[in-house]
Every structure is written in structure tokens, then in C-alpha cells.
Length: 431
Ligand SMILES: *[C@@H]1O[C@H](CO)[C@@H](O)[C@H](O)[C@H]1NC(C)=O
Ligand SMILES: *[C@@H]1O[C@H](CO)[C@@H](O)[C@H](O)[C@H]1NC(C)=O
Ligand SMILES: *[C@@H]1O[C@H](CO)[C@@H](O)[C@H](O)[C@H]1NC(C)=O
Ligand SMILES: *[C@@H]1O[C@H](CO)[C@@H](O)[C@H](O)[C@H]1NC(C)=O
Ligand SMILES: [Zn+2]
Image (cartoon, rainbow, N blue to C red; front, side):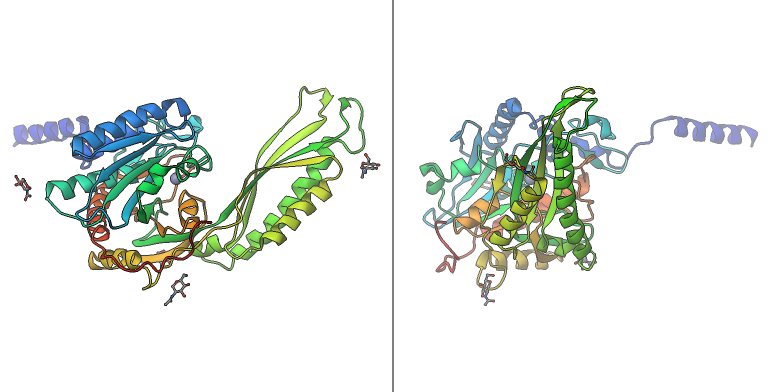
């Protein structure tokens, strides 16, 4: 008996001493997960690393057996892999993501942001795990499964991976759409990045808010730090900050009566960068402030321009403004029975037991550019029960969520690729 107890004790002890075999650990052996982590590990917040992302994408396409092309209409790479459909005359389906990611402040992260570390809950941490390296791998893996199962699609699929989405698309989609290679893709519908959901209900974004990003430079009386001149740059900056923040408070107040999914219908504003000053004992003669504004779908451009002009007026003489982005048009994609691609998506998801609701995208994506060309485009991601952390610290995705997503995309893409041809009710063309 005693011996028995001792051995029991020893067994317990040994068990506790050994590292607990984690129920998620085996997922790390899956090729899908390996590809996802490898892609996240490429630090594409740095432009010089985009070429490694392209090398990686070429390997994915080659491995699946998809022909591909790499373009660089504005110096940065754009990758396109293609699965040709049975009827290549039909408008194609574009499965779009972007290879660039936003920068990180590594000190804020639980794990190194380009490690793709998986914790004991199966959460894979890293910049791009939500925005949007996950989606790129999910598209590739879904197509791999369709090919493996000899599924035939009537429409051609183009898996496109842009650069410079986060920078506004000047070196990415905005340059690409001007090329004959883009026109040759003959896109009928595009799927692109979407919003993660905190519960089981998925989102489809059908319109983006219009971004206005502005750098204000206030100039004022500089000099020795012992003086206190009137109309110093800081006095002007203070007036500008007060004016912007007053508007911001009003918008925040409006937000209180809205649900999370309605936030996109409001105009947001933030002062995100402030620069100025030379030394502790010198009064700066200029200060720069960068303001990021996202206009609600109903905001009137003239009114917003008057608002910005009034900020400049309040700051006072000698205030310059430079627009980093000033989008005035953002078209809608229909999310009703007139859009056969939406109908296909909704039916596929509902048949799989999932719910999807259309929402305004509070951010801005490459889809704004596509929709303004008259191409229907919906933002979508399969990330359920996920805290949205795009652009934030500790961006992560659960490994099971990621893998479930591949299954969902496989069905979605199969059905989208077989949406029958019909007269496009497509909205506007050639903006
Ligand atoms: C797909 O087609 C190939 C070649 O015709 C065949 O060898 C393979 O068994 C098929 N796979 C399935 C899942 O039907
Ligand atoms: C999930 O969250 C969305 C957005 O907040 C909400 O509209 C929806 O009703 C929720 N769904 C469920 C099933 O709770
Ligand atoms: C603005 O500049 C003009 C000319 O430079 C000057 O006459 C005027 O007093 C200035 N106004 C203020 C409020 O500083
Ligand atoms: C479908 O949506 C479009 C775009 O929002 C709208 O213009 C159209 O009137 C809607 N059609 C129907 C039948 O609801
Ligand atoms: Zn993104």
C-alpha cells in the first residue's frame, strides 16, 4: 500500500514536472499553420522585406500548381496567382489581400510581433495575424483543397496580394488599376479583408468611410526660451488642437447612442502625430500635427471642407495644410437580391449555420478603389469570437478560428466561382 502511494505520488510529481502537453500543440505541425506562421514571420512593415513576401507567395502558388505573375506598376510588388475557370469569358472572382502590415511598437507586445508565437490557448500572436496575412493563406489553402478535390469552377479566380494598402494604395492598387494587366483580369466581384467579430455573427462590409489625412503646420514666433512671444507656434497649435478635439468630443457623444456596428456611420477624427521643437531652450517656429479623419457615408464634402478650413482659421495666420489623403467618393456594393455574389455568399454561410450582417467599414481598404471603378466588392473575414486587434498591439488569431476559416472559404469560393452569368446590375462605372 505504502509503495503504491509512493508510486502514485511519484507519478503525480513527474506528471506535474513535465511540460503540460498542450491540446493545441499538434496544430503547429499542419502545413496550413506552418504557412501562416511563416508568412507572419516576414516583417513586411518594412518595404525592403516585401521581396521576401513575394518569394513566399511564389512558393505557395508553385506548390499548389497555380500560374502567377508579379507586377510592380509603382515600384512595389503586386502578386497575382490564377486558377482558370471552365469559362474564362465570364467575369472573374478576385480574392484580394495585402502583404504589407502596419509597424509595431515591439515593447508593447506580449510576444515578439514577428514570431507568430502560439500561446497555451492556441492564440497565434503577430502583426498581420488579423490584417491580413491570415486571409491570404486561407484563400490559398481553400484553392489547394478545391484543386485536390478536382472541383471545377466556371469562373476564373485571381488571388491578388497588394502592397501599400496601409499606406493608401498609391504604390499598390491605385497604380495597378491603371495597367492593362489589371483590366485583363476582367473582375466581376472582389472579396477582400473584413472585420473580425466578437461573437458568432460575421460581417460583410459593403462601403468604406472616406479617409482624410491632413498635416497641419503652424508657424509662429520662435526665439530664445526665456521669452514669451505672442502668436508662438505652440499657442496656435493649442487652438488647432482645441478645435479638432471639440469636434471629436461631439462625435464621441453621438457614438454613445450607437451600437458597435453603427460606428462606421459616424465621422471619426484623431490627432495622431505631433512634431516640433529643437531644444529645451528654443521656442519652435513651427509645429506639425497630423490629423486622421474618416468621413461617415453621409457626410457632405463641402461641410467637411468648411470644418477643416475653420480649424485653420482658428489656428491663425500662417497655418499650412497638406492633404495626405482626401477621398471624396466611396461607392456602395449592393447587399440585396440584385447582387448575385452577395446572395451566393449569404446562402453559403447560412447553409453552413453561420449568420452574416452587412455593415459600413469604419476603416478604409483597397475595396474603396475597386468599388469606385464599378466593381462590386465585399469585405469579409471568418474570424468569429475574436477581439479585433488590427493595427493594435498583441494582434492574434486562434489557430482553430484560422483553420475553420479555410473550411468556410473553401465553400464560399466554390460557390462564388460558380455564380451563373447574368446581366450585371452593377452600379457605376469608370469614376
Ligand atoms: C482528381 O483527378 C486526378 C486525375 O484525374 C485523380 O487521379 C484523382 O484521384 C482525383 N481526385 C479526386 C479526389 O477525385
Ligand atoms: C453579435 O454582435 C453584433 C455586433 O455587435 C450584433 O449585431 C449581433 O446581434 C450579435 N449576434 C449575436 C448572436 O449575439
Ligand atoms: C496675420 O498676418 C498679417 C500679415 O502678416 C498681420 O497683419 C495680422 O496682424 C496677423 N494676424 C494675427 C491674428 O496674427
Ligand atoms: C439594392 O441595393 C442597391 C444599392 O444599395 C440599391 O440601389 C437598390 O435600390 C437595392 N435594390 C433593392 C431591390 O432593394
Ligand atoms: Zn488591412
